[in-house]
Amino acid sequence: MKPSTSRQALGAPVLSVRDLSVSFRSDTRTVHAVDSLSYDVAPGEVLAIVGESGCGKSVTSMAVMGLLPSTATVTGSVRLGDRELAGAAEKELAKVRGKDLAMIFQEPMTSLNPVLTVGRQIGEVLRRHQGLSRAEAKERSVELLGLVGIPAPERRVAEYPHQLSGGMRQRVMIAIAVACDPAVLIADEPTTALDVTVQAGILEVLQSLRERLGTAIVLITHDLGVVADAADRVLVMYAGRAIEQAPVDELFAAPRHPYTRGLLGAVLRPGQEGKRRLPEIPGLVPSLTAQPDACTFADRCAHADERCGTARPPLTPDSGHRVACWHPVAVTHEEAAR
Ligand SMILES: Nc1ncnc2c1ncn2[C@@H]1O[C@H](COP(=O)(O)OP(=O)(O)O)[C@@H](O)[C@H]1O
Ligand code: SF4
Ligand SMILES: [Mg+2]
Picture 1 (tube, rainbow, N blue to C red):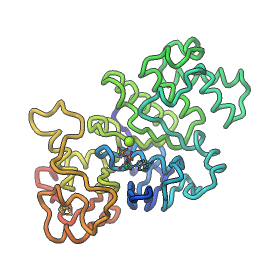
Picture 2 (cartoon, protein in one colour; picture 1 turned 135 degrees about the horizontal axis):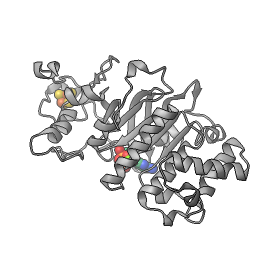
Picture 3 (spheres, rainbow, N blue to C red; picture 1 turned 180 degrees about the vertical axis):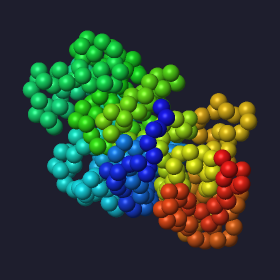
């Protein structure tokens, strides 16, 4: 799945997230899971969000969807078209969710209802948001199963989740998510639980949705191979913050943040070509309970100096390629020539 669109060719953002912060308070401590995160996605664009486990990818998405538990404190802005979703009443959000803004998760079995046929589950969304009759909903469910590449959809529509393979269940989840032709689809590690051949099929489905329906896709993954194949732009998260953001080709050709270089360097090193997952970088991700006045990567960074330990680097202004580092790696002649 290789993107055919460039950012310049795309319109105004359909989803704009600004200064999104999420913290969880318990009796004993506060976890700052997401800190001042901002991103835009344009219609038909695929934005990949990448980062180690626990860096705040899922919490970001749940905050955008308005699905976090009441223990979460969310600040910032989430605009879908001209609507502000942050702070909107649950009744308003319920109208938007599943209709204009949809999400698919890593494990489709836990999101599907085991006692209802897949047709009923797709049909429910259509009946709720589009007021279709039962017969219309069934007909449209068959169409949707075909759209997501399920063979013999007329037969499959009457089956239960346990009768389907993991890959087919994920396709059903995508069919439910796109049933109302949402402007934005958030896919949270949609292929992580699937094996490699099945993953490729799911990515093709997402690609065709973006091409045929113009769906904007926020693709959360820790698989750099998926990022390279599927994304237009990439946002790299570290410890709840955006630390680098760039068009995908530029990020892979000339990453500027030491953390991103560590991730990609390990993948691109000779003999490691087959390694697609995020590599181990020495050191520990900092505790999210502490918000020190320092670069969050300082303890693991070979380039850290005194300034890094006393002041937090902001993201550079939006120039296409943004980086949050006091000493971003200079682009080499070799990289510039690529
Ligand atoms: N409901 C919650 N209550 C408290 N902390 C949470 C909750 N959900 C997530 N977190 C914490 O927020 C951080 C980010 O989690 P998450 O977004 O799930 O990471 P990722 O998806 O990048 O692996 C983690 O430290 C996690 O423990
Ligand atoms: S700001 Fe300093 S510690 Fe942080 S990534 Fe850049 S060089 Fe490393
Ligand atoms: Mg997650």
